[in-house]
Length: 446
Ligand code: PMP
Image (cartoon, protein in one colour):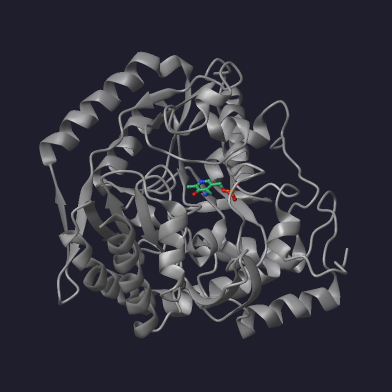
């Protein structure tokens, strides 16, 4: 509805529209006036305007930036054909093209694709699929999931149940969430990239071994109840931007094999090059049974996620009593989203190998001075992700505004100011992002 008296958008929004994890009377959001290239034009509630590099890539999604000509063209072309059709009993080229492309690039021999409409829903589908797989193999009692603490897999109910039980939303919905089996968080590790590009992991080997013993013990104790292992590979995102060693993923693969569990890898945040591998599972050379992808799948243009699985799992489902995977959202395989996703994958494949290490190297270089700040507990990078961890919770409003004044949009959470900028950022833009993060932390937290 047009507003005749010119009330600022943020004021019209406030109390009317819910924002992620924010109270209705929370701080007013910034209004987006335009988004182009790697920049957002934002208007604050007090009228101040900002041109800012989007250091968040809209929460991992906009890896090619905004208004990318190739993605815009793909969207326009598909709009001119058709924007949406139901997927029950129908198919279309955008879906088949994308499924072929995804199975071709995915780690491991993925043979089947289920298109879901968001990351959380894809996790639901992956968990359902695991239960159906176990039931099909005559093990219907296997209804629980083994996961690690510190994880984040989405906001729907089954997805929430495998999120960290303390920092997730378990306390808000006691009794409503399935009770899963939680192993400790995999011990922290650090990837050091030398000037020559050589990669070296720093880790506490004995901590990994102790962790592995605990995981194996838990799996053995719960074998008959467990359907699958569910985990984010190498980088836990919303659960704390925690980097762990690929060996831990190998341990989880072994545990899954030893106990007849599926290994479900949540690549929703890590997929499409972000961690320095096309998929983070590749750090461990692990072949998952099920992979969830989302976020950057469409280059951030439209909501779309996918669940990929192997021929073995597909065959088991087909031989089961139900024969089908029991899910079918209205907007399944939305043609617009699929068309843009295929175009986005083309760009990813063309550019990520150059851009991700370049962005990562610059982030590591220009975030390093944060190490010297009194309240900074850790600075780490992995691929094109940079993290500054404080020793106490971030003053989100103040750090956001301080970064905006330096031309950068960040959205800190808990004790973390972090960035995963679009891959297309120039060297200068990456430097601006990192310097703004360091300066904003210094200004607000000293
Ligand atoms: N898994 C991971 C690892 C994620 O980072 C997210 C989103 N932050 C999700 C699942 C849920 O995806 P969505 O928000 O699209 O439902």
